[in-house]
Length: 218
Image 1 (cartoon, one colour):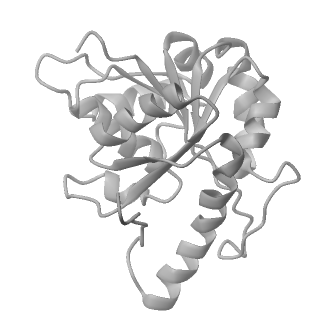
Image 2 (cartoon, helix red, strand yellow; image 1 turned 120 degrees about the vertical axis):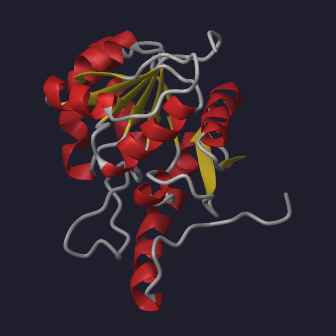
């Protein structure tokens, strides 16, 4: 287990963040939950499972979690992304940052509404700077499904300019019980981010609980 990177999950007390934390901690990763409240993060970390012989999850402020980790996973809503990125920016230089943000704009969250940079991932890259190894993933998996031990019928599209960094995130997806699919450069993240709004509409129209995606033929 010592070869696994230490993970900070920024926004780790939310549904997606805590779901990823739960599965990755159970898979033996050293997980640090980040939150605006370090006390809230610590309380949530104590509730996470730990793999046999694995490190106990910890909780810290978002900035301290990012500072202490090798890989930083951002699981915050679009409306708070900029503020959170500014908090962690001094601590992520040259690190792998995995952005899961989808630019949902209430009340019409089932309508695709992209930012001027065309995607939340490109917005994050611009804000954090070129030194950050940015990868985008986990947009289309329902966070509440990660809270269970049930299999999830959903692939994870992984976007990033460096295939080696995408491979690291594919390993994280596999550890969380999902299949990671290399989907090209970071600019392609717009496809998965937009697809999230489409899936929200599908959930409503067909009254399903968290529709996902599956890539066939591979």
